[in-house]
Image (cartoon, rainbow, N blue to C red; front, side, top):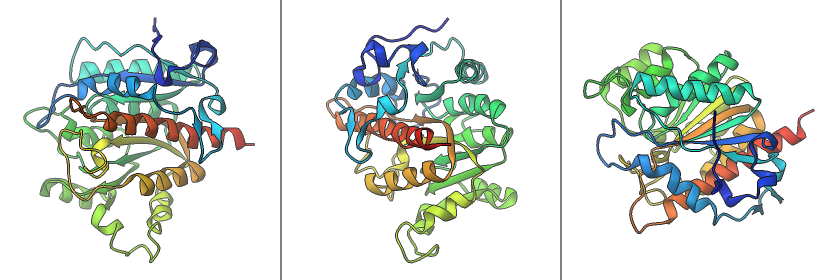
Length: 302
């Protein structure tokens, strides 16, 4: 049986946060086993939920209180994972699968990127034709890293085993074997340098529709916080220069939600820095905005 938090995402009243009344479920997954540089992703989910209490419920861009349009947002207690690696992935899959079966839109907050494997498996079972959209600095396609096939550096290699419909955006760090794998398997990878080169058109956002054209109707979205530029998001374990800013990222996410059906998403790899509050606030607002983009399409669907 799942229990739900009283100090929920956004600090919503029970009328808008009770599980049986809510369409959206926030699932904190504080899993951290394989971080290879900066540590602290286990603290990410709680820090985001704490910061979310400071997010204004009215959104000026969408001209609405998003949580109402979304039909309520419940917040589950953090998933307690007894095992690690494949056992942890299976536990996450089972929990997410249960929520989807109860007609909930599931948002997972990590924790390290490994959590995405289980969440994506659960969604793939319900949406076998879905695409997996990865926003990330790293391609995460190593077959194993430091002897572990469930390392955060191997997430997309594991996803590829059950879903070949992968689209990667913002990649700017990988080993040669990963680059070779992308070419061999013809993975639809959009490198950051290419997105900014103008090769997709003269307009700054010309690449949006090129990326979206490679996506199937149903999309599972996974966003690693190091997708963003370290100036915006310094609180990650493996920061990479050349990342994306807030406005360009929101413009892209809004476009995806307009053109495709986002069936679920996760945000991973936030490693809070003591005394620095804005990274977790940024991610709390990101999650709220993305729920807004997705739920606006629910409200306009015919």
